[in-house]
Length: 143
Image (cartoon, one colour):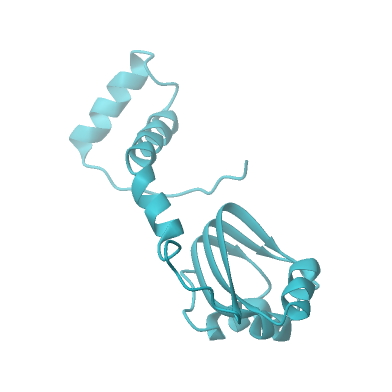
């Protein structure tokens, strides 16, 4: 699994407590403590994430021109996905929590032709030209 390095600020008292717990052997490192704390918070808020991913699905009238794509994890957008959307005459309303990976052989024009809306919470892996096209798509993105 790919990981990203993040920086956080904590007050010295909290840091001292973390260091004490590491010293006592309850955690292997500060990073181990922080990863577990993040994991527990994500577990506690699973329902909220699921609600976001599936909002608007119940009772929604299907839009014949738009495909809704919802992804938790890594979503790969490549020539096959572009071709499927073009062949079906649909654009995609894309919602990703995790990573959005655009294949190098997807052109910025392909992105503009096939995506009607995009929201990425996480990381976008794309060329600069592809990122510009993503940002031009209605809704923009978080990266």
